[in-house]
Image 1 (cartoon, helix red, strand yellow):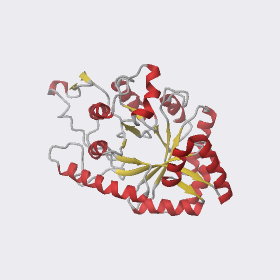
Image 2 (spheres, helix red, strand yellow):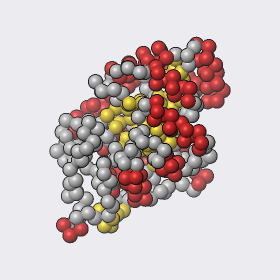
Image 3 (spheres, one colour):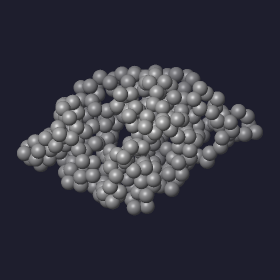
Image 4 (spheres, one colour):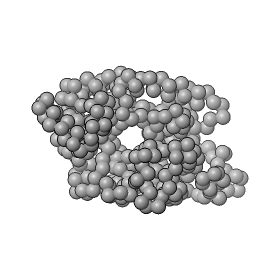
Length: 341
């Protein structure tokens, strides 16, 4: 069994702390450092901040918490160009994380003030599926990334995106939400891994087809186990689909990641103090969800909870600490899970 990977979900506007936390995360052995994308005052500009972290780190993976595929928000071609450039100048450290977005009632207030349409779920998923398919063509992706053999690149088969031999690298797409009429982009090396956050059935099917990593969110081990069985069937169906061109290996399946809230403390007294802060800052509903479905406890308790997820097939943990820039919690967590397999 491979050692699980631990990633950090970061937000905030204090750039010096963001930078210092990223350096510390790499030193502590975290696999990934992912920063939020938002037009609101919650965050700075995501891709600008991430770009500045490249030269001050060496190994840690970087990327957005979730980057949006929404033509009303940003050109898909521009997003692809940004991603290819980032992958090249970071020497292969980008992990492209995406999804269809949060529920309408939570998200519309993030977009409406800026004149950006945030559609209802069915349309949002349709936009996402079409956009992701075209995005993969822009970045030259046809198959899953081989995480065990990063030096071996996936075959570059362009038949489904080429109109003629005369324009062998040209991309054509005439869809409902996106268009490309002979666009050309230089493929990044190595390939850009794609994580798709998906909890609902439609999005899980898209993840089964297109994702290198499927990420579920805020599930207990029992809930994840049930959802994972469902996803495994979807992956098998996708692999058996003779028309599918997304799998380089017919037995391949996306890695499993889970997003979880984290509250960790050395003593029960410290833990209770942190819980009180959580209740005040996020309200009773979020408080109950974090306690029921998060990684909450002392180091031994956290270690036990992590082990339960690993036994169910989790490859990666996407961690949202109560204070995402708290070095003490970051260090205590990594000490707690040291040697856990």
